[in-house]
Image (cartoon, rainbow, N blue to C red; front, top):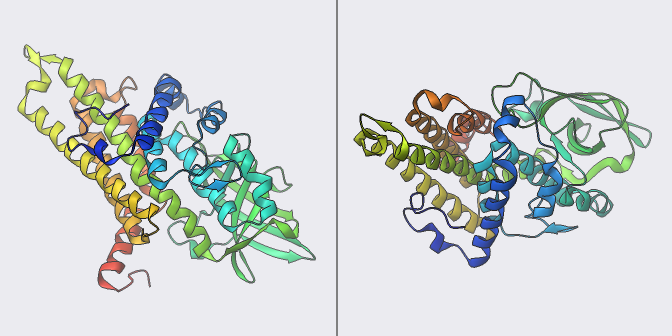
Length: 388
């Protein structure tokens, strides 16, 4: 399934291998069959379609960038193309794939013991088990160094106490990767969600990511065995490594939401008649469409370049910040502009742009706000940290 010529103005397809295009087509077909028919109702009713989890596992996109343990071992570019197509369906569905694979599974794959990997990863890759990643707290968002959740030793056990907020999937997860302070610094812990003292409560009345689950977590003297700790996950650097995997996916996914909004607006403009002619014939409408297409092509080309760097082992953290900051910011502007082409009709769930724009407000905030990524880039450019 090639990108429509009206969206691919610079022949981006020529930069992809046959295998990459085949994977993209498979995911796009899945989105058309499994996500588009239900997404308006799921968003309207604030329902996460749990029935998709196993189907996404069968599609091979859960932890697809990881190797072994039932994971697909696909390239960074292939992962990027997959999440771009998924987010063209909805950011909430792409967020599930990101939390499951880029955060929870990556934490276990990169920092876990062999026993932990064998215990959790095959089931998570298949969609039989669900994971969550619990770092953010009510008072520690952009400043995770201020984590208040604490894990103390009690004999051979660990006992965790604290609170987490905005934790994706926690209420339906089988296991949570919980980051906590210890006497030896920040560490990650594998917490089965049926452990006594673990409570996850979905956050309701959201205006964004309505077809997704985010939760508050309370940890009341959660007792874990000694082997619950991630042996190789020491310090916040370990958590940030997982966050960078998620940020990388976002810089691709946001272009999917932008492209879907643009194509929806283009189709509408060709058929919506005003003053005796389609509104696509009006100069101002054409300018809007051209401006959207320009940014989609530039943003997707940037994502592809960064993906090639990642596959070559050369991608730097500041480059991920650049991609996340630019592409999400531009995607929101595109979705908002696309909505204007629909006029009043654009505020209904009959059309996708306003839903995408609403979702992207969350995407813009999580895995590092605009301000955080701006200062990461500022530090790289000047050599002076504004965080200190």
